[in-house]
Length: 193
Image 1: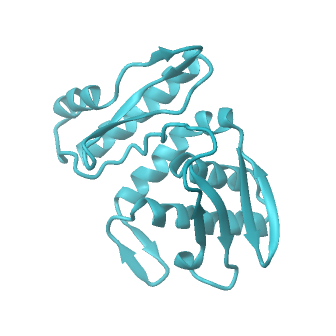
Image 2: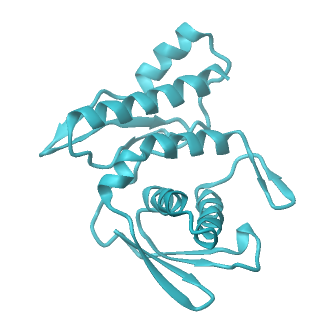
């Protein structure tokens, strides 16, 4: 996918391959787990950043990465935005502004329908479980890897929306199992908090 980024009226088109987004799901899950604990947004502490604010936080990190020519961080932040907002059209970065000043424009619907990647959102889950109960709950909340056509996926139950969210299509079984294990670990750790 191409993510269009505008900085000071300059248009950048960042290539974010679907395979890269699939490989980085563990990193994205860790970002979500960190933000689930609350986040400092400039002078304000936000207890539960919503999906759009999370994308703005990633956009702010993307701006820093572009300014510092940190291509790895830039690729990860662009990937996070694409993974969590699959119908993103353009990201307008405001170098002189604050995190909430970055504008994220969404298309009416995604150009190609892709199910939203699981945010591994931990809102609404039971917390403070002992390790045995947390392991049992995480096993209920993160499905086994399954095959759809030639691709592999797994699902994560989002307690806040009371819906299952599918991972993006993953090209091979071994990679899917690795990403599923990372999602399971993130959910287990959140349940133990």
